[in-house]
Amino acid sequence: MRIYSAKLTCDRIFELSKEKGWTDSKLASILNLTPQAISKWRRGAGSPSIEMLTMLQELFEVNMDDLVGRQEVDIDFNL
View 1: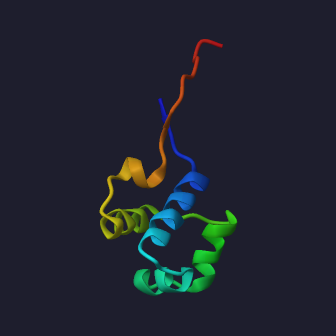
View 2: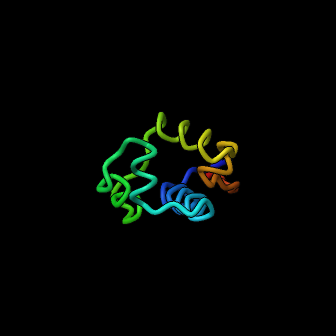
């Protein structure tokens, strides 16, 4: 089963942004967000919406699995 981690997603967004040489303010400007919204992502107090994830995927030219940091985990549903 694949799981989604908001923290891994935000970490990946900032990693990709850093690779492009963008500050948090620059990323906010590109996405038409406030710097406070980006700050919430960095602090783990918020995460991007589905619509924003789609924009980020296109912006960074990565697939969604790479962007959101999905992980494969084994879950035993027969507990």
